[in-house]
Image 1 (cartoon, rainbow, N blue to C red):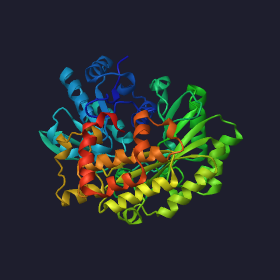
Image 2 (tube, rainbow, N blue to C red):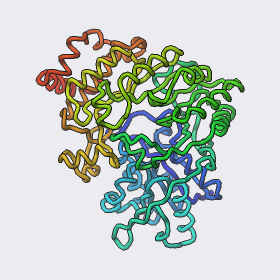
Image 3 (cartoon, one colour):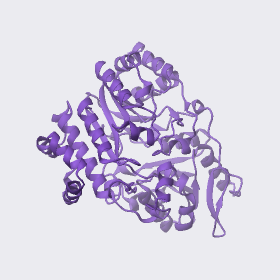
Image 4 (cartoon, rainbow, N blue to C red):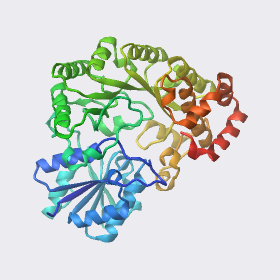
Length: 486
């Protein structure tokens, strides 16, 4: 069977991207594949990380498929791998149409078209309708000029077609094409405690009204949240459980609890039907209450990942988070009260953050004692307010997306107005160890973190954060021992 299009999640490149595959199907290409298949387009999918394939093996599989078109999904962190994949494919078959899409290309389309001749088309924003029109136009040998939402090269010059509007009713979209992926190969999240066998990523909405200054979601997916119903969500989870044995779900929505009634209705459906699943969600601290949390727990929620970001009210306001430290504390208390584990996502080095502000974040960690943590330096992404600020301040320019390399940051540049790159990374590493010292789950942390946590007493931690000289020296030492640190 020859395919019309082959959709790829590009290989892991251990020099430039994460060393581990995601614990769930790549939803971006799974949605695209389902949409195209529903319209009688022959689709092949390749999740190279989960297959363990390198760029050449992936390219050969594409050529073997006989596809007219190849599409690669691309984030800022894996942009080099995505581009390397397309280059390898084009070198084997000159006339194949190479398409790239995703969050990163949406905001760097001109840069990609002008610098990578093996890329034929960039899909900006949502790709379902756009990609279908590309496939049908190529098969019928029609012009690309009428297709909204793409950038491409014509006669050697960059062409920007008008933007495409968002899909208003995402309830109308088919379930992601889970059956086109090796569902039994996806690993469980490393911080999972529940006795479960199989996992999957699921998303239930698009868009975000929050406008956080470090995030590109609003610009990419729209300010209005477009959501599926509780009934549709339940059907999808039940399908995953019955078809693939998926009993643990990671909801990818940044704002799973934004629509309160939907959450309540979904939980009641799970409870009523006795669906034996566990799941984790991401939520804002100002969108939960005890009633909702109690229902989430009864339905199987074992962890909530909160975008807490900082322990400083000043910093929270500056980054447009529009929450307070007190709200973080209240949500954490209620979450623990009903028996759900707490994970914080935190940022160090935000905009006008001072060492005193950073220490406030460390104090919040000690007071709340989150079970788990994800803490990173303020990272610059295209399409964000932070990126525009960083350009005005002379910290970066558009060409940084062509050659910036730092595997420790996922090849995304850091905001270095407040701390050097090494200092920012060191503070994030220190935050991991500090969380380990204070976490109820301390015994489940990696051995090296537990060993360092033993000696990281309060006074030392505060000095390492606040003392400029000691922080710089420690950051350089940490850089040397970087392979062993979180």
